[in-house]
Length: 224
Image: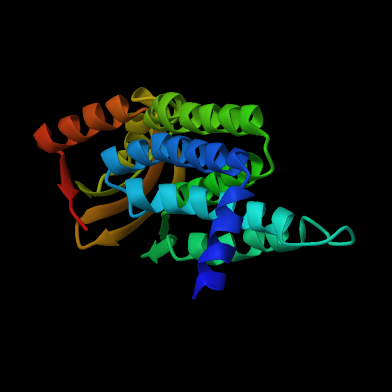
């Protein structure tokens, strides 16, 4: 028993305090990114992101510390990239043709890179990486929404009375609201025409067109 305690004491006595600094850095940087994920109520939240960052850092430290002079210090750390891919894949969901969770998966992957950088002692690089990730999640999110509001894709199902000029009138209606048709089809239904239009444009223009169609006596806006 005394040999065991002596071995434990020797381990602590020879412990490199630089590892403590790295693990603390990984915890703080991972926590900063994790707060953003937690505030937005994402699947990988505060604790998860910290664990990913600290785990990547710890594996990198182990990869450096356990080997001899001929040991490749990147051998274990290199497997983090493969392993984190499975974790990120679990955050991606597909539903009715739409994909969700790509940003969360990319964040998991990027945070693992922060942990590896800190584990290798590149504290400044890890800090800059965390700053870049937070910029993408906070600042660029507003830019993405701004672009999305101007490239909003919406689908219309409109019923109108079948008249010779109705087809051209419908096309003109979308042009007047600065909406570009990606798909434009129609078919006859007794004495009416049913239009199916997929159009892209600013969200505010979509709202104006839908309001006009809903208040018009010539058109009936159907829901699908």
